[in-house]
Length: 156
Image 1 (cartoon, rainbow, N blue to C red):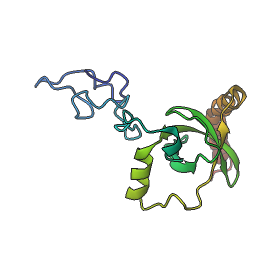
Image 2: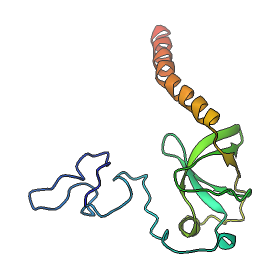
Image 3: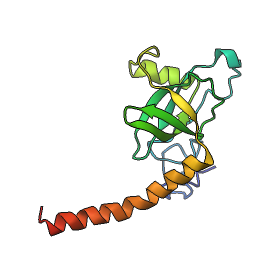
Image 4: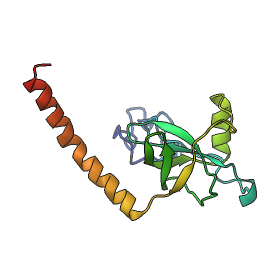
């Protein structure tokens, strides 16, 4: 079975040799696509009691940035949930990309201690937060074009 949502558009097609093109997993990656930002949670089938769950989650942001945040409020989070996180400049919206034991393994791999000064997840994003985020995204392109126009006018 091939991935249909691949950004390369070739995961669902077969090559001349009959193999599925794309991420070289022959369509078995199960990550929902074939770009470098997708993560397949191969530990999701483990039944871990709620009181033993790892309290750090990986959150991804616009532009491909990923960071780790502490779930100190013990929110019921799932991969793909929009969350509001604290940062030095205020509160930002991100999407949970990884949770559970895989985050612990990622922290070990990147030599980050889970008792380091990780910032916290404030809350799950509301509809109002998501709407405001969409409005900000809609203003990105006009702002970029206006900035380019100003740069051109000033001959910078």
